[in-house]
Image (tube, rainbow, N blue to C red; front, side, top):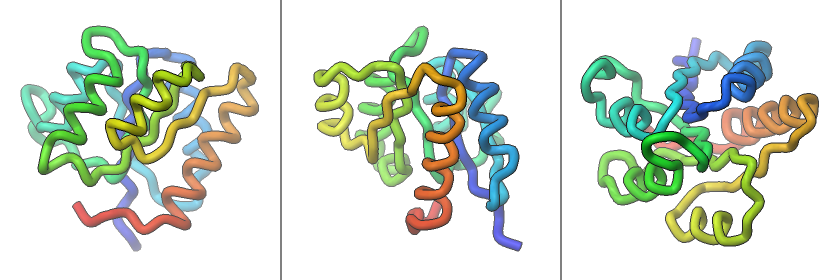
Length: 143
């Protein structure tokens, strides 16, 4: 059996966390989902600092832009500037459809940018589409 796909979800909205967990629950692939709720925690997780010394290295990061303490834009910039972390694919999953956010995210080397729909069923469908594309079609880089 293949090792589980390690996903780091960086999201501060409890409803979106729950929806993502539910959408991935019936996955065709074995997924291990870690969740942090702000940008400071995300970077601690990725750098295995503090309480995250045994954190798994994620195969992919689902990153919201509007986060407390350190926003997702700053997190994305830090990830892509770090030699050890930059190959981890980062999927921006946010409510912002602002063209400036989209352009800035791609300029910071986000792998894709998805605007969260307001409809719960559409949100679940988007998470399923992410799962299908990134875990069944794409070849992820080795850890």
